[in-house]
Each structure stands twice: as C-alpha cells, then as structure tokens.
Amino acid sequence: MASVIGSVMMSHVPAIGRAIDRKLQDDPYWKPWFEGFPPVQRWLAAQRPDVAVIFYNDHGLNFFLDKMPTFAVGAAPEYRNADEGWGIPTVPPFAGHPKLSWHLIEALVANEFDVTTCQEMLVDHAVALPMAMLWPGQGDWPVRIVPVCVNTVQYPLPSMARCWKLGRAVGRALESFAENLRIVVMGTGGLSHQLDGTRAGFINREFDQLCLDKLVGDPEALTRYTTRELVELAGTQGVEVMMWLAARGALGGEVRKVHVNYHIPISNTAAGLMLLENRVAQRAAA
Ligand code: DHB
Ligand code: FE
Image 1 (cartoon, rainbow, N blue to C red):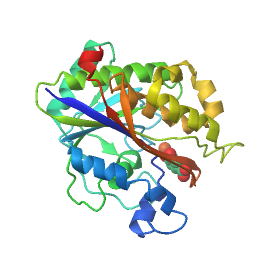
Image 2 (cartoon, protein in one colour):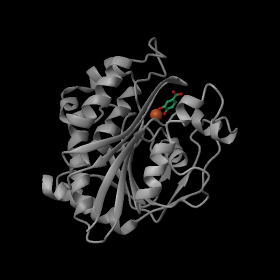
Image 3 (tube, rainbow, N blue to C red):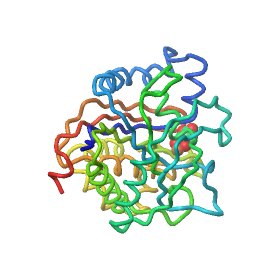
Image 4 (cartoon, rainbow, N blue to C red):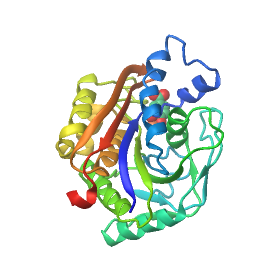
C-alpha cells in the first residue's frame, strides 16, 4: 500500500525564482531563507519519496476569475510551468501520476468533495518554486507530482475547517492506493503577507508562530478561524496558510517536527518552512 511519509510546508514568494537564477543563495538578504533548506533536502534524499502531492493556490495562470474551482485536482501525465506575470525563469515540466490522481479523485468525490478534474493544468510559482527549493539543480525531478489546487483568489474561499477536512480525506485516499508508493505531501503559500490595499506589507509574527505551533500538535485548533478572521490575522494573501493546514490534515494524528525555519521578510512575506514526519498512518488514525 502507499504511505504518506511526511509533509513539507513552505512559502512560495516569486522573488525566490529570481534569486535562484542569479545564484544569490549566499547573499545576506537571501541566506536566512536558503540556509533553512539543507535539512529538508537531506531528509528527502534519505526518504526517497516517489510522489509529491502538492496543495497550492493558483495565482491567475491556470484559472482566472471567469472560472474558479474551489478545489481542483490534477490528473495530467505532465504539468508544465509557465509564468503568470512575474517574469521569473520557468522550470522543466513535472511528470504526473494519472493513476494516483484518478484514485484520489474517485475517493474524494465518494467522500463528498466534488473536485474539478484537470487533465491539462499549467502550474505557477506556487508549485515550481517549492519544487526547485526542495530538489535544487535537478533538470530531472526525482518525484512525480499530483497538484491539488485550492482557491484563494475569488471569494468565497473555502474555510479553514473545510481545508482541514480536505487534507484528512486526501491523506486517507492516498493511503488506500494499492501500490507501494512513498508519498510526501506539500503545502505551499503563506505565512502572513498582504500584497495590496492600505495594509500592504502587513506581517503578523505572533499569529505565524501560533500557526507553526498548532500545526504540529493541535492542528484542529486552526479550524476555528473564519476566512474574515484569517484575513485580519494573516493578511489578504496570508490566507494561503490553508495549504499548510490541508497538508497537515493529510498526515495521521501524531507527527514529529523534523525542521522549521521562519524568516521576515522575503519580499512582502513572512517566509516559513516546516517539515513534519508522519507517525501514524491514516488507516490506523481513521
Ligand atoms: C509574494 C508572495 C506570494 O505568496 C505570492 O504568491 C506572490 C508574491 C511576495 O511576497 O512578493
Ligand atoms: Fe502566493
């Protein structure tokens, strides 16, 4: 059977793409961000996952305001990266895992998550940059991917509680896949940031720390925040912390915190990285 071995949650600020391109990893501005990664890269190299299931939010590349699914799951053989307007270099395409995608979709729909299915899907910086950070310098990605896109753009957004339940359902679905796959679940976005309006530049260290803390030992505590409260506490784009909660939901009850890094700011964002190892399979926890 497949197993979900852990979750990597991290920010996806577009400027990271430019920093990689210009090899600024040791630049004083960038060093606190890049030096957070080697422990996670080492864990991945040792654990050798076959597939990365990635909770992320599209920023207007694959979906636009005219058609905006709340939850969409990729079922493509390949996902190409394209630039939605930041002008950062694109990365090579990612191989998909259509069989796992369709298994996931069938299980989700059976569990009353009526997701949009995408047999073609472009992926933006929210997939490309986390992949480039976790597996740097590899033209050839060592994992296949299954993207799970959550709407953070067009209101109404799904609630934290709903994202938690989605994550739980995804975790159980993945672990009911009959092949012997090792799966890492990623959640990209956050932490607190606001790019627009009178609060542009807003960052909330206290709330971020609370999220980092609760995600480890008491993730359901985060389900009590309404979208409005989340915007107030995390900023308009800080709602992306939904991806972290969904990724946490895909793990069983008990996790081990392997690594965490938090740095303010990268661009306008409180940049976070966390790796949680799964301790209890969803099958047992369900
Ligand atoms: C920034 C952060 C994001 O999450 C994003 O999608 C785009 C820009 C930023 O801080 O610049
Ligand atoms: Fe974003």
